Length: 166
Length: 155
Image 1: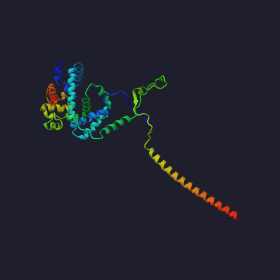
Image 2: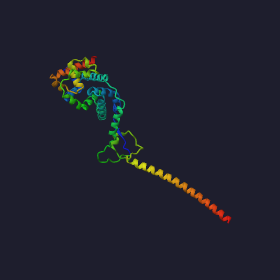
Image 3: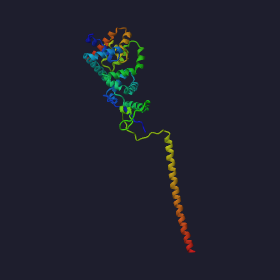
Image 4: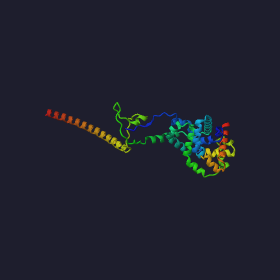
């Protein structure tokens, strides 16, 4: 096949717009690998397509990326269950080998926060209110007790005066 | 203790942030031309970027323009919208006019070139489907598509 005819046939245009069949796409990728002319023509078309899109771009409303981030974070926070597998022996340093640790790095280091169920907030609120009530009661009874002690001291003093006067 | 979030160690040329900064505007413009509703276009944009992390490795390893891959992903995402449009026959002159407003290149094309370009670019039709719909040889459809691109290139 004449490669110039192939480029002129419009198949490259159909491919960059995603309207070529799978067979045509496979064939094109083969020609792209073997013929620099096809590769260059395809590059030019892709650049043209990008130019059309650039000329018609609309700036996304503010907050759009936050929506995307929020959705992705939700997906990330879904717990991932590890498949059951036989344990490898400890390595030379005596640490357990973990193949997932080998493939991934921790983006967030160990968190210093804990998560509790929402229902606990009522328990914490009740504990807080009760602690305030106990504190007020303790202060009240302390003052009462101190006053009673003072009165007792006064009575003792009066009683001593009375006995000495007698 | 909270489960630590993890990410693949493989370094990719593009991350989601960069893809958003560079292509979100283009993608929103493209989606708007298809659905003709900015809110709906934004909704599809968010959905496409949500599934993008699953395709990042492919996008970065595939020797193909990122915008073309994004556009294909958008077409896959909008397959429902396209299926509804596929029921329609040939685009009328009024329907074609809808696409003229923001795409200055379309106005320079002949009726046949417009018909082919708009159906392929905005309605996700294949050249085979168009050849049946327009009752033309597939080679003629591709030729019209090539001519449309020549107009875009020269203007």
